[in-house]
Every structure is written in C-alpha cells, then in structure tokens.
Image 1 (cartoon, rainbow, N blue to C red):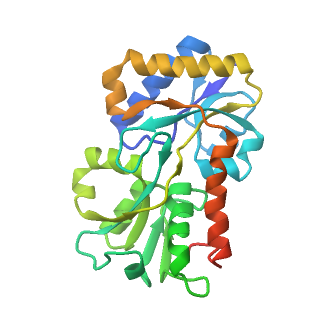
Image 2 (cartoon, rainbow, N blue to C red):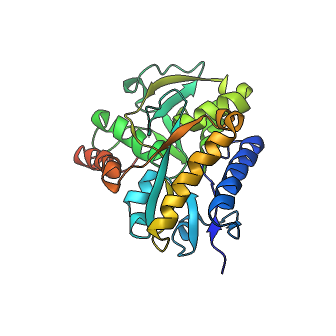
Length: 262
C-alpha cells in the first residue's frame, strides 16, 4: 500500500494550493515517489492514518491527542507580520467602520471563529479575551464559520464583529483577496505560539523522517520564487515540549473561568 500525503492548511487561494501541491510533490519525489497526494475529507481521521507520510496540522489538535499518533517533522518559518521564527500569532480583526478599537471595547460584540479545535481562530482568541470575561462570558454571540476565510467574510458582511485570524492566512488573504481584507482593520495580535507543524505517522522510520526534513530544505531552496510566494523562509525542528505553550493558553483561560468562547 502506498503512503499518503497532503498539505491542507494554507490553501487560501487556488494559486497557493497549486504551489503547496508542487512543493509537496517535490518532497515526495526525493523521499518516496510512489506516495499519493490526496485531498482528505476528514482531517482528523486522515492525520491518524498509519500510512501518513507527510501532512500539516494545527498545534491545538496536536496537543489535544493527535500527538499520540504522529511525530513532528518540521515547523515552517514564514515571512509574515505576526511571525517570529517558527512561532506565529493571530491578528484580531473587525470591520473598518466598526467602533471596536481594543479587546475591552469588544465586550458584547459578535465573534466569528473557524472551528473549536483551531489554535489561531479559537484558542488564541479565548486566551486573549479571558482576562476581560465576566462570569464566563464576554461576547454577545459566536459564529462557527468553518474556515478563516469564512470568518473574514462574516466580519466584512456584518454577520460578526470580530475574529482572530492566523497571521499567515491573513498575509495570504491580503494578497489574494484585497477587496475583502480592505474592508477590515486590525485591533491587535494575540500572544504567539509554535506554528502549524508538519507531521508524519509514528510508523515512519527515523531515517525516513530525516529524509523528509532534508527534502523539505532541498525543495524550498530549489524554487526560490515559489518559496517567496509561499512566504517560506525555512523550517525548524521543534520538540513536543515546544507545543506545551498551546495547552498552557487553554489552561490559563480555564483558570480565568473562560473555558469556551462565549
């Protein structure tokens, strides 16, 4: 049975999806040419497959149990506002003409988020809001949109007032959808945490994991213009302990009696 791979997390536009696909294909050619690139319907099931050779996940699912099934291969370093090495943050946005100019001013507003298992869209926003919550509440309403682009559109279309957006996604969206992002403005950035890691099944051998890391560097350097479009500067090799800060963000919100975005 062939191994499988996919890079599903930053396909913000069709052009970016094509570049991520090409980068992945270059990596697989160097490591295991018979591997299949697929488009997974259920990411949580896909990430847990024992034949997973390479993919990318969010750090929040990783610390919530996915780490039992996968090993860390690398964490991308992006050239985007809000990134620092392998760390990233979320930018909290509102409409350009909205009255919100601080987190405190957002009390009673409507928040959009991509999914409850997102570090950038949910965990980071909850952590930022927690010190200002009262009796476990801060927002008047919340809306789950299914994606960061969906959250941006919800705010721009006045179906929500604020959203926290992965700063890398935001950088891509500014270039791909300037009419959409031009209707929004930034309130502030959240605290930073390790970026979205590239992962492989724990069934992948240490030798093949090292080969994947080498192939990622080679594929990046082989196409500098593609790397520029993907805003990729390089890759870090982080440990599981680095991602403990994401769990700590969750814990700090719970201690503040703000266990869920509300």
